[in-house]
Length: 341
Image (cartoon, rainbow, N blue to C red; front, side):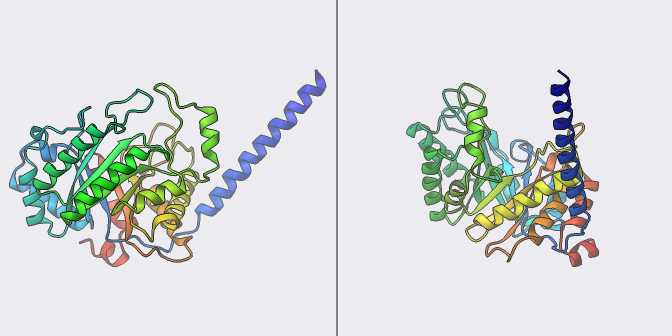
């Protein structure tokens, strides 16, 4: 018993020592100020009310000024979600035409995309079954109606999407044919990939994909490249980081920024998702940590990607004036941030 207790004590001390080493190493790494600045190609997820409810001209003008001042190039206006059968009732986006006209008037050059998604059926659980060809056809018809309404692109956010989802790749292929024929954009939101593809079997072993509980839907490098070859833009949902210190949360953003841009930065426009909502109790994630982490990740690149990149702000309904000011100060190129315009 004494020997077992002694070994348990040494093991606990060893584990605590490793944790202390990781925390101290991350803290030291986090102290260096990033040199990279952000870009003028950035996205924003926007609430459904913009297409579902009427707004005054003053409200539209204020929206245009916000987008222009913060160098938002693409806005994903929530226009869904899809019904189970793949349709989107037109009543759901009855004010889309007014919105799109206002964006073109007050924020010329900003692309308004229709943000569409649903819980994807997996193993009989979920809402929309993309494995059904008839459902995919109705999704495409809904896309066509939204493009006819004037949207500059289609932005998909189906969850969960696993790296063996051939039905989703088929939908992406068909949607790309549609958007390119109309000279519009196809964009997609995906979960962050695992830092190492070898972790996928570990996820599968620990959390079997059966019933309503699934292992995390992390795209492998190959799957992420396959998506990038089909999409004009890929937004990585890097947020919701359950880490206890700012340095660890910042490392999360830095590491994912570097890996994602190395994987697909030459193939498509990339937006790294950053949050403006309040962090969960006890966790260190916030907008300042996320933006600084993304900049550190850009610093770590051997060379800049060939395609444009930026951040995707999640979301307009959680972003107040203070957060926008913080975003401009930390992220936008120095000349723009310093001018305040």
